[in-house]
Length: 472
Image (tube, rainbow, N blue to C red):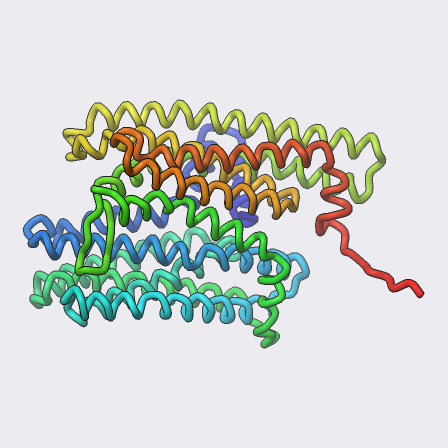
């Protein structure tokens, strides 16, 4: 987020409508740009390869493989990426750039090893039990490994600050996907699943390799300390656990409906999903994703400056100045969170009403729109909770963040299991209640920090280096 914040503050220092629009576009593209490019490219790929005319079995297999690749590659990379991000930030602060590439290789090796251990049995089971074409299963595994690399490399993007280059890389990767998909299926006559999945794998592999090239070009020295990341995994285990619980909580309700509901379907005897519920969840997430964009803009351009001022006063200011800086920091934090909630409420209501009115024209079935409202409310609270967790990390409260994310995951899982027996309009209640419980813990932890901020930052945090002296 540091690179994003720097660019946004530079943009918003310029006054005027153009600067405002530029900042809004920049933050929007930074947060969800790659996802939007990918979604639009998939839509075009399906259109040019005649997806509508393919048999239902192939359609279900294509959608299931794509869903599994995106969901589980994100789950596998998120926990480690959080610790890697902290390691990168510390090394940049210490101007020790030679330590970053060894960290990159170590983290990538861990991610790839875990990913291979996970996807290999699934691919084998798809072939042995589901009768899936072995080439298709192999391509699916390759696509999963490519997405692991892409997600992991995105962790380093904040340090690069080459957002224009990253955008062009995604565009180029998706262009390669479209050309290969059309050429293999329409011109050469490669079977549909091989052509489409193969082109997807090629596109994401290109993106992953290009991002690696950018990272390697930026961090062009190395100290060969490939074990430097491992102590961070032990030291910041709460950060790792927080991200793990958060990402699992994001999909726990989906998993429940994949395996335990009447909406569940099985593809190739291996891949479970609930297309109706998954589509409702996707719409609910897109309804509220603008909250993350607003949070990025408001926090990185307003709160961050007050936070820096407080840290500076804590190190060199007098008591009155420290208290004033603390009060200003928490006032702006409350003000920004209220603003984010208010603006997103309005935006969510507009999108909600639009979808409810236009659902028939958009080919969203009645079952999807019945499930959607509860999930829309749930994702609103999920993203608010996420913002609160980020604020806890600002104040070095790893325990509070882990408790919040852990509660979110456990409550979401338990309530979603119960919700499978509720009426469809309440299917998404697990996500809402789980997020609300997680947000409640984060809220009270922030209140506690406000009352004990100096002790939290000066005595417990990393603002001042700790020194231990042996007494004899």
